[in-house]
Amino acid sequence: MKTFNLIFLMLLSLYSNAQMKEVVYADGKQKLTGISVLPEKNNGSGRGILILPAWMGITDHEKEVAAQLARKGYPVFIADIYGSGNYPSNTEEAGKISGRIKADVALYRSRIQSALNQLHKLGVKEGRAVAIGYCFGGTGVLEAARARMKLAGVVSFHGGLARDVSQPVGGISVPVLVLHGADDPFVSKQEIDIFHQEMRDAKADWQMIYYADAVHSFTNKAAGNDKSKGAAYHAVADKRSWAHFELFLTSLP
Image (tube, rainbow, N blue to C red; front, top):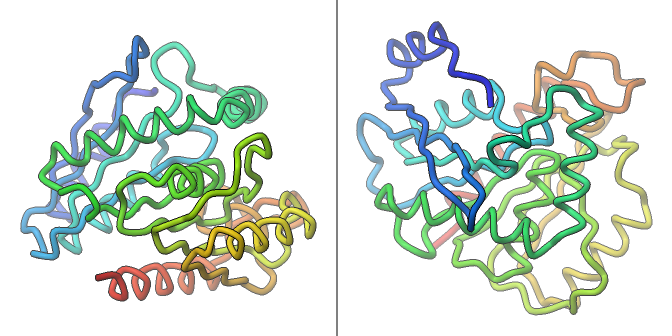
């Protein structure tokens, strides 16, 4: 993981009224470095947010989302899924590393649970956290729901929907919100259909919202604006998905 950008931290301190710091923790023998973001004033909801990053690991995008949530009074923890010695330096490496972790569902779930434990250490009680994830992290929050982790809900932003078919379809006890680009070329119709059936079989409380003209990574400005690449920022989808996320938060008990 790259060292914090000092200018970013100074701006965060000036404008977000949040406390952001690196947190070193572990999953088994693997050293991990996540980020905690504490609000200047907690909103009193008891709610906390766990962020699972996209395949490049923790970037400015996840930090900006965390700062935005902290401004609204939520304690936030950004997970490190890869760990020291495993961070990708380009998208090719990211594809290989994230692919290995997705193929090892037990490992992915363990990394998520370890990060969730860190959020609990910030004062968020079990069952009060909401896990959100982007792309690779969007797949991760669905795995958290499948594993029946003690969460209040999960939200997947332009995430993959496929599951490990060697695992049985179990009951899903937490509300699930999937925010999806209608033109995302990386998630096939077959994958979507199988996911829909999985949610029905699991008797889940689930929603899936599609955004017109949006492809993969529609919330990330760093993805650029070239839709033909299959991943691109989409301002309208970004704004609407955030509004749907906030509505989801307010609907939870």
